[in-house]
Image 1 (spheres, one colour):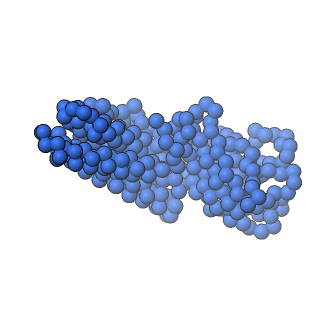
Image 2 (tube, rainbow, N blue to C red; image 1 turned 180 degrees about the vertical axis):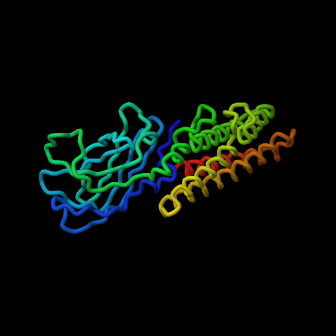
Length: 291
């Protein structure tokens, strides 16, 4: 299951840039505010959502075009960007092949193209550009693309959200079950998923994913210590992960109460209700860490 999201440490791709002075655009410098962020549509990081404001008008016969660029000179056009009457650009590009864009591209740029464009495969003059710092890009990849020691080598933030979701599903199954045995079976599953003890989880555990997320967000921040936007994004991811870990720990403790509650229906129901609420909050926190 994929959720619509922004790139973890998403501020890395926030654009608040100064327009390069070009006669074809403006004789004055202008600030372009907004974001270009990776999100999941049909697959992990298969789309780029662009949302900019204060976009200067171009003369007739010119158009803006968005590009994703990699470190080796590779480029991908994400389409002609259409400026609205209120000077905004709001567009989404979805990879037709389901490519994980975050795995390959670290820079976003907006070029100015002639209309019609005699060479559509090559960017024209670049008006705006921003990038994930080279020192940070590997750490972002470990969070949202792949980390080799994880089950299926899934990204750390991916695993955190995924396993928190599995815990929430079994919390609800416990609450909805009609027999005491089934209620306690699913409550035990919640414990195992949170702690990484096997069962229906992937065996690594919500708590371990959360601890690694916090650690790697810290690596991102340290890798670009002078970049305020990187630091802010890393801090936000860390805070969300810490919150998610706290919810997971409390849900585990409520699950333990449910498992030990015997035939006390009142005690059991309170524990199950608390477990459902806490795992739902944990999913929300994991989504925030993932964004």
